[in-house]
Length: 404
Image 1 (spheres, one colour):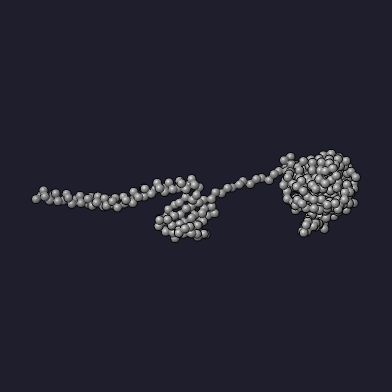
Image 2: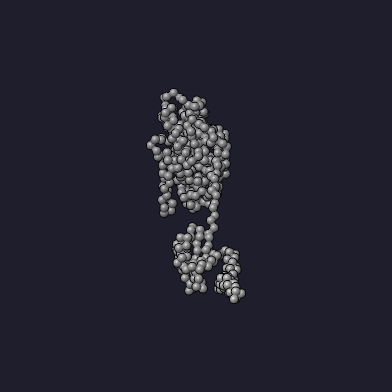
């Protein structure tokens, strides 16, 4: 009896362990088929992803939840619904650079995600002018001008009222056209002679645009007006090209005229100013402005506020490049503006200020409107300190010889 009781008690003690083992076996039998199926599907999915990547197309991803949950994933908003064959397809965006395509396949929702490459282009710093490269912008002056070169001269007394780096030789851009216009005017060629713009007049130096298309025909007088007033490059080139002897002869005459005027630092290679090899100094340009002021045609055309020309069935309106021409605060006798990146913003003028006839030269000014602001600053300074009849208070009380 005691021995039989002992055996019965021992079997009851191991009963919980037997139950736990039975539960584990049942769970293994239930989960094993699913695990094996998932293991088989994983390599297939990996192969599909690799193949899609090699084809540079979207990577398919199977989603086991329904399409409704896919539409709201990460805030994606469907933008296109299309049908290919018998399957419906939706295109959603998950951001600016992510596009997903959703469709049904074998009863499952398949999402193909494609990322667009974003190419960021570094900003190219603006090209420095010759004056900036030479360090001329570091020169300080009493008027705090933005132009690295400046010169203000009394046209009658030859007194230098203001100067800054006036010996520096720099590119002069379209200030070149003042010499071009002066030579055309002095040549007394027929102003009514028709000149046609050709491919030779198209800018290959800076590839600048022009409203005078190839084939446009205007008179010499009209081209001269546009060159001096609105700085039309093709007009200026056509004037030089059709000069007796051709363009080469015209350029040689430009340099000969500069030498005759005493412009020792000046060199021209073409009639528009698009080439940075057209160079001069403020002192030389003051001589040119004085000579240009003596020519009635150049005075009239360079200070014209606007002009219209007929091109075929159209009428083209051109305007001055110097807004000071239209200002009631200014009385300008002759003027010319210029700009290329190598030269910066340039301006030359003859103007009457505070009862005095002044020649002003501003070269290599930084900023689109800075040359105009410098001229305004000089005008106010002259009105305050150098009015006609008042004692001179110039920073450099010296005489400067002006030809003519």
